[in-house]
Image 1 (tube, rainbow, N blue to C red):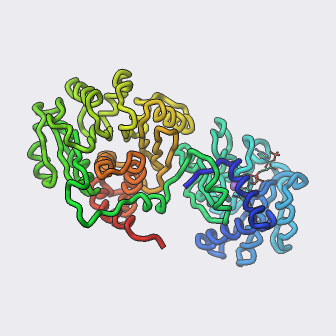
Image 2: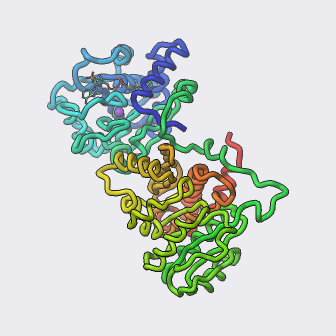
Length: 505
Ligand SMILES: NC(=O)C1=CN([C@@H]2O[C@H](COP(=O)(O)OP(=O)(O)OC[C@H]3O[C@@H](n4cnc5c(N)ncnc54)[C@H](OP(=O)(O)O)[C@@H]3O)[C@@H](O)[C@H]2O)[C@H](O)CC1
Ligand SMILES: [K+]
């Protein structure tokens, strides 16, 4: 699914109004109804609701929401911040429609800001996608007081003060929402870790913006929905055999880190690969043969570290390399040989990333359109350089992928997948229980298996990251977030694939 900028959302808005031949006020009403529907499921009508409205259409939404909540028996108070003379037309129309019983007060100066009861239920309708500059003066004061009040804040469309699709200047005041309910599409800002404390939990509610407009609009930013991913999944054929699904090689493990090889291998096997061979230091032979009996094991002559590539390397369809390998000199040499000689697609993780990050020569040797890197943010920084904020990181991701014609899955709460053509896909599955050792090794195994099954590299990244997160979400239901381990993810991979095979209602 596409991610739109604030300007494109405005265009979608105007296009929809024209296409459906309706008044903009009607679209605002739809938005308010969609928000209220969510709100009713979350808060009981016994709740007293304080709605803070700004001068634009976000404030207009707030007024319409106040009216709808009043109709549904909530006790509502409205606070309008600033000068209503400059308010938008739809704001003014909704102010007219506000029933007399709903108290509406104007906050014109600091002393008008109300003292809220403890744990008040606040709707933030100060600013949405029309914010053009940092909050100052009275707006800043209101937001600071709301943030300090202990209120449970639900933001309409955007947390007020946060820029939709570019870096909010340093030190600006922004609402810290508990929930953000956004219209039709999530906004780019929601996917960036630096905004966690402002956006809170976000959800999208549909308001019927023109699908025709959205499908025609140009963007290189996407988020992956279940529908997108299901379309990628290839059915297994009746007359197939293990050779149909690829032979993967994992170059993984080292002394004290043989578990990384076990996790990657087990995840690879649980993701549909036909055959798997693991080449690991000889100290790992018994461990691997015991823990992963489905895989074949080749032993490296070095007892503790990877030091050589297997002889008959050409027979493999894909190579996954990195988990647990360390950065000893013989391992660096082997990685150099791999990049110089291999014609395979490569899934490169962990210390294999660190080895390449430390050598400009190796970076130059990266085969074009053959490599998937799976770094966490620190490894990415080593590979591509330091950045000051998440927008810079995103740009660096695009630049690196374009320069080296590679794919990168930059791991995080919303893993960002960069492609050689400059596209970025944000993942939408996964949870904080997955922030534990070994889950990255699992991802390497999953993506390696998918490439082995002839998914192209872009598909393997999108599907692999999604199904890995989905396995985490399924594990959450059985083991919770605190006790979750990487092995739990592997155990839930079959169910995750099965979920994706179910038709969507
Ligand atoms: N398509 C949709 O998703 C729909 C969204 N709706 C809602 O509309 C808002 C966007 O409304 P818009 O009027 O464009 O913008 P805002 O309400 O966010 O704010 C614009 C007004 O605020 C002024 N402004 C901007 N920044 C500041 C600031 N830092 N301090 C003070 N004032 C500011 C701006 O005036 P200027 O001319 O001075 O810039 C505007 O007056 C969207 O988020 C949704 O909530 C529709 O309801 C339905 C369709
Ligand atoms: K808002």
